Length: 263
View 1 (spheres, helix red, strand yellow):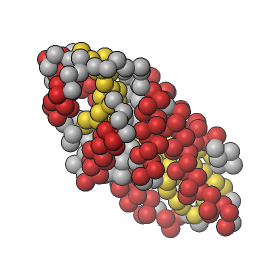
View 2 (cartoon, one colour):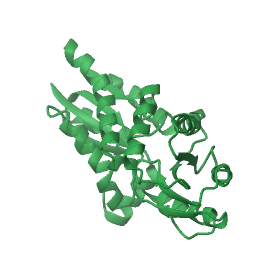
View 3 (cartoon, one colour):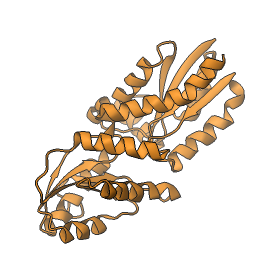
C-alpha cells in the first residue's frame, strides 16, 4: 500500500525564511517517516496565488493535495499541521480532511503546536533555548499572530505561564490579545530599558518584518522606542528551532504509531 505524509502550513512568500523554517520542518518530518513519500500544502490562497504569479511556483492547497494523492494511488496518508494554535486555519484543514476521508483506506491528522498543557511547557523550553543572555532591565517580547477564533486565549495562557515560571519574557499578539500597548505598560511598570523582539510564528514573514521589526510608525519596534524602550528585533521563526521541529515530529508520531502498531 502506498504511503504518504502531507505537511500543511499557512505558507510564506519569503523564500529565505521558508527555507529556514517550513522546509526545515518538512525535512525533519519526512526523515522521521522514511517509508512514506512527503508532500506539501499551504492553507493561504493569497500566498499560493502570489507564488504562482511572481515565481511560477505551484503549491497545492489541502483539497488539491489530497485529491492528487488519491489520484496517484496513495491509500495510507498521515497529515501534520505546522500551525501554532487550534484556530481557524487548522479547523479549515480538519474540515477538508474529513471531506476526503472516503478516498483513502487510512487518513489521520496530527495536531498543531499548542494542543496540550505539555505542549505549552515544551514550547517554553524551546523559547528559553533561543533567548539571549539578559541584563536585569532587559526582556524578550514574543510576537504572536493572534486570532479572532477563541483559540486566541493560547497567547495569554503562554504569557501567564512565562510569568509563573519567572522567565523574563512576555507574549503579545498582532491581531488579538495581549495587545502591544498592554505589553508596553507592563514593561514600563518593570522599569525595562531594552527588549529583544522575536516572532512567536513559524516563519519570520510579513508580520515579523513589517509589524515587528520595521521603522514604520505603528511597528512594535517604533512603539517601544516611543515609550523609551530600546528594541532589538530577531528575525528567526519558530520553525528554525530544532526543539520546535521535534514537537511537530512528536505530534505526527502520536497519530502515526498507534495505527502502525495495529497494522
